[in-house]
Image (cartoon, rainbow, N blue to C red; front, side, top):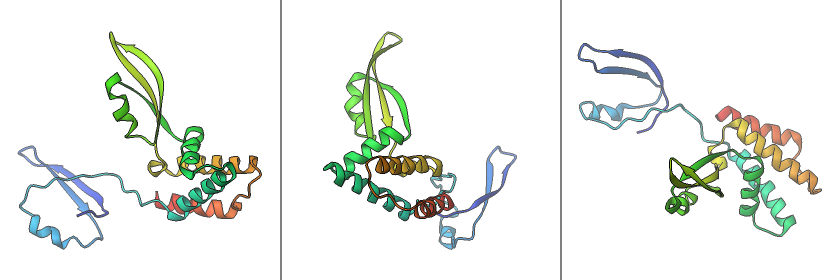
Length: 172
């Protein structure tokens, strides 16, 4: 079961075990049957699902660019991630490169390097927009808007863009 709540209290008993008190407005009565069971528990900061309006707007804009360039939306998306997205550098063993590339939206090989006498390949890996926070998504959306303007394409009006980002922010 997954639900939204807040940590109310953390204490430690005389045996060294931690007790965690969580308050929630969700109906969790079905958890009572698990009261004496050992559970796998995951606690993470709450994030609402991202706004479908903002995501839909991004993909509509990518589609407009793709149509103008006579290509597909996915290729435009990957290019926009390279220009305006978030990324990280990682180093992997040469035989792991292809496997790592399958795990990322976009990955570029930067070349071989030597780490403590062992060969490694340095990769530049781009995160998919589904992992973005409001600020990161805003940069991506602004970049795509800028690209559209440079191409002479009609962009969504500022009010629509601001509303989509506000919805995104309210859900982050």
